[in-house]
Each structure stands twice: as structure tokens, then as C-alpha cells.
Length: 467
Image 1 (cartoon, rainbow, N blue to C red):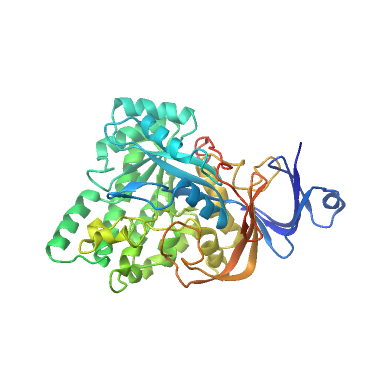
Image 2: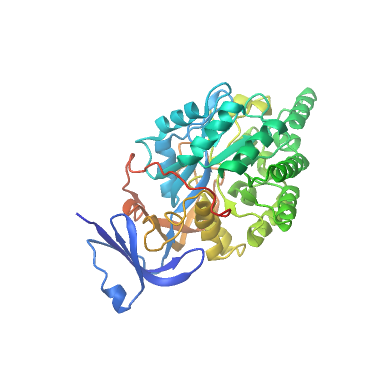
């Protein structure tokens, strides 16, 4: 039995085009597009017709950086794969790429298997994995080759968090050399963790324990220094580099310089750096703990450089780094010692809306919105054109988006499994109305109609900007 759906009358917006078109979906894939009102479009017939008049029809978002059920600082991220992917769908995201973690002393395979076990049968939308490499040795390097072959084509390393995820320059270089051979992409958390630990220790010794000091010790210059070092190590290795959660003017400048030199270097930023600042970290009482993440929020003046980087393509992707910890009972672990506040913020549900607000505010164009949130992440992580666009043959991951609806962001109405919103009370123009994942309605006119287990694991090709 083939199933057909037609999405009629909307403005189809992709990274490259805007056209008033009807979209025919057959058996979970886009079968055809035709300009609305033409005989070709009128000939589309289906059991299910979705009226998108006055709305945008956009590809489902791809969030290339999430941490569901992630262990950190003696606790776990509050969203499971079930709750997190459901919230993602509510926000117009139809694919996540989460991070499987290698524990020190264990194999990459053991880490990947553990994450498959967490996710399988629980996801509302499709998912894939990156691999966090915590322990570089000969066995690990061989495993990287095997993982690339089976569709885990990106590996994250940390210049931060000594004693947990930290890799030294020699380990980073070895992994980069391996990636240069096997086609993998090294993703880097670029902060000088060794220097930061010294500053943390000194701040606590001075009695500087409040959340705002988290931002003060993790200095922008130490992000820029690590970014520079990662770029040069990648250059020595002949490997591509993707720098995650870029937050500061100085780090953007390092990426821009490298790209001007023609190096295969890419950068991601996140909504929290575009819309929030150290003003949030300094909120009175312990409220600032809600905004503790790493890299940290920066003073407002850094935002202009991030927006400019997104416009000039020196930053290519906006992901969330969704890693939610409840304020009550989790963030509170750091009362009296900011270094014990679990690092991470909720956001998987808010990204597409916040970036549409950026269109309304004139920071980016409509097509650039789709590019940084859908098409580029799909290409960066080897999912295009199956994901990230609306074209014949692509998965029918489609969002009907109302650009005129107004909403107020609040923990009372969001679907993430966390007791606060980082954007509480913020007014936004634009809202997701209907979401299809491989042609199946997950959200139908603001009602959840999805189910856990619909989402499937999706192996990835290598980075499509390197082919």
C-alpha cells in the first residue's frame, strides 16, 4: 500500500530557492514539486492534503549537536532520547546528531553500542551519532576507520575538561592524521582547559563562587588560543576541522583567517551565543546557573561578530549543544562553587524559531535560515540530499511554518524535560504548525501525533564539503 500526501499552497523555502509550490509525498519521500495552481500541481492527488496557504514549507531542521542522556558532573542530561526528540519535533527539527561517548580505557565500539541501546526504539525523529574520542591509542585509531565505514564519520575531541574528556596536542594530532586518511571529520571543543583550571582554582580561592565567574574564568582569549592551535594542528595533519559552539569575536577571527588561507576549517555557533550574554550569567541569586555552559556566554558585544560570521559564511552552522540540566536538583549542585554546576543548556525545541526571529530582525535572510539550520548541517555531516532540502527523492521531512503566528517562550509550554527555559518570556514571531518525518505526521496543527520508535538510526556519508 503506497501512501500519498500533498502539501498545498505554501511558499517552499530551501537554501537555494523560494517558490510557491505544491509538494507531493509518496511512501515517505518527496515525489514531485509543481508550482501552485499549474495543471501539474492540480494533478497531484492524495489521501492526505495539508493546506499550507500563507505558510512556509521548509525542510525539517537538522540539529548537529545534541547530548541526550549525557552523563556529566555526577548527574545526567534531563532529556532522554524519547523526550528530547519529541521536543525537537515540536520545534521543527526532524533529525538530530547526538554524541556517543568513549570512556577512558574502553573502546569506541563499547561507547557507540551504549548510545545505540539508549536511542533505539525511543526516538520520535531520525537520529545519527558522532563519536567522542576520549582515549587516543593504536586500537582507538584503528576503530576510527571501522566507524567511518559504517556511517559514524565525525569524531569529537576536547581541549577542555582535563581528567574527563581532555586530549593533549599529541593525541589530537594523531586523531587528525587518522581522519585525514579515512575521510572523517574532527570536531573540536576549543578551549584551553589546562589554563582554565588554573583560573578556576584561583577564583574559588578568592571566594568568587557565583555562576557569573564561570564566564569570567573561561576567557575568550583562551577559546581563541585553542581555536588557533586546533587549526594549526589540523593543517599539520592535512585534516579538515569543525569547531563546535564558537562564542567569541576572537575565535571567529581565527576561523576567518584560516578560511581566507583556503583551509578546510568550519565553525558552528549556537542560539545561546546569539541571543543571550553574560548579563544572564550575572542574574541575581543563583539564577545565573541556568546559563552555565561551555564555551560560556559572552558579553553582548560579541554577538555582532557571530551574526556577521553567519552572513559571510565564516560560520556555517547553528546547532544547539542541547544538554539540559534541571535548575532544581541538578544546576543546584554548584551552589557555593560554580565549577560544580553541570555545564549545559536546553534549546533543541527553540532553535528554528529563534533563527526565524533572526530573519524577522534582519540578521539573516530566509534562505540563509534554512541553509544554517537544515542544508549545511546535512552536507557537513553526510546526510544530503536525503535530509536538509525539499527535492524529489529526499526524505519527506517537512515543516509547515506559520511566519506570522506569535508566541511567548516559556518552560510552562515547552516540551523539553527541564524545569526552566533559557528564553523565558521572550516574544517570537513564527511558529511550527505541522511536522512530517519521512511523510508521517509527528506534529499536526499544533497537536503531537508522533510516537517513540518512529525515528530510525541514519548512517552518514563523509563531510560533503570535502569531496
